[in-house]
Amino acid sequence: MMMKESKLTNFQQRHIMDTMKRGDTLPLQCSPTSSQRVLPPKQPASAIYLPPILVARPHLRPASVCQAGGAYSREPFKPQATRDLEKEKRRLQNIFATGKDSEERKRKPPPPVRQEDPAPELDRFEELVKEIQDRKEFLADMEALGQGRQYRGIILAEISQKLREMEDIDHKRSEELRKALANP
Image (spheres, rainbow, N blue to C red):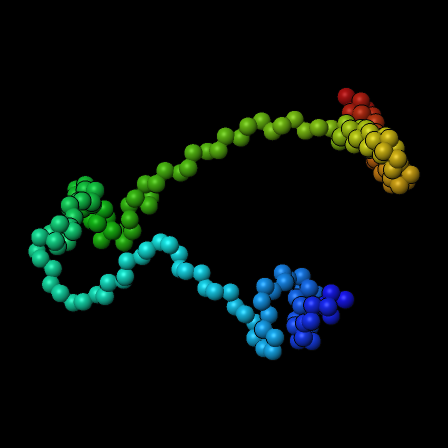
């Protein structure tokens, strides 16, 4: 309604509607017949002044400039570590005489690795008792969280499996004990 009252041309109305659909800001000026967009005037380049790049021209530099830049300074000599010449002579004599380096034979064997007492092995029976306790605690935690139904069957099956293994171990222990008592 306002567009018709403002006496805008069809082109101008279309242009304003397109800008509104895109969500852009409305143009301050709109050419009545041209579809060219009015570009905002260019901002002046940054206020920082950069000196012009100097063109490199071939020229001779004075000797004082070259010497000041360190072009003629020598690196100090750093000698390598000295070798014992007598020892080197003996080594080469052994190589020529035997065809082998004597130092290969002289190498000391690595020091024996100290074998510390192995950690006392937990009895498998006691391990099974601990595993059963862990599973019972887990099941109690899950029931407290309301997930007990989901895990009850799995955990009870694992516990019964551990109990069977404990019975096998107990049976073997009792047989070993009988044999030990029978052989005086």
